[in-house]
Image (cartoon, rainbow, N blue to C red):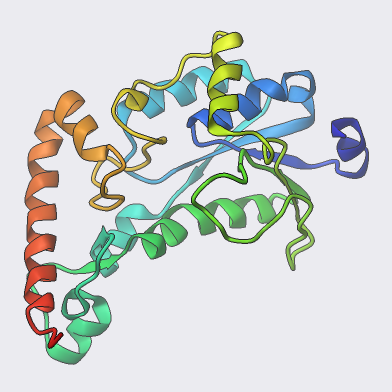
Length: 239
């Protein structure tokens, strides 16, 4: 399948986050490393461990490109990301009801504008016609996109690990002696931004507390403020 893919695509990108799935995909694709470029998007405030990993990958693969993300600008404009959004603290809420001490935005909106859009735009602008991603069918992400989907820009998305399970990925990495990032000792997936205040229950808080206690203090302060704003909003619910 891969040989046929590279016959029809001359400019292929592999989207790399440093998480277990992208690590497995990268090593699975080792026979074709000279046929694609590894893209990593630096959100603007990554973990130092992630930077170390990317330096290793940069020195290992023939072609590596770092894309500039937009997280600091997105946060400055629309506030801290959250799983639950109190509407009075959003940008729209501030416009209608007046400014609050801090603003909050949806976690998905933050990730989309900070990471996903810059990544896709960079690949498109580079003339990429195929993107390889480590997406699996058993992930919580149910966007509905299947391997082989072609975007309106004519870019084909290919998910070589789509039929793999999470345990398949972990077994593959172990068999091939590929070390997981140490964040997996606390979190369920790769971590992008050190100052993220969203993705509750995914292990970010545990990891910060264990490995970056200074950053954890500010994380806890911000999340506590978000929780207070949510509780204030909920207090108006009549049911």
